[in-house]
Picture (spheres, rainbow, N blue to C red):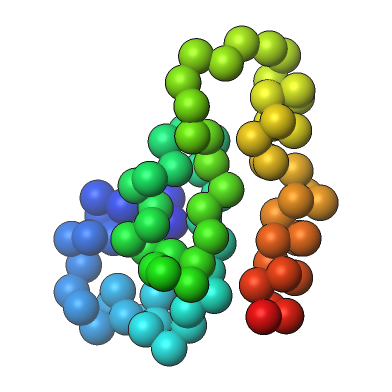
Length: 83
C-alpha cells in the first residue's frame, strides 16, 4: 500500500477488493512506527516494524535487529499459514 491516505480515501468497495475481510492472515512490513498498521492487518495479522526509537547502527544491522530480513518475513508468513 504505497499511500494509506489515498487508500483510506477510496470507496468501501475498492478497499474491500484490496483488503478483503475474508483474508485475515496479513503481514505489514514498516521500517518505521509499527502501530499504525494494525488497523490494516487485523487481529490475526502481524506487523514487522520498529517498536523503539533512537537505535543507532549501520542500516544492515538495524534491519536484522528489527526483523526486516527475507528470512524473517518468510518465516512469519509460514508460521501464520500453518496455524
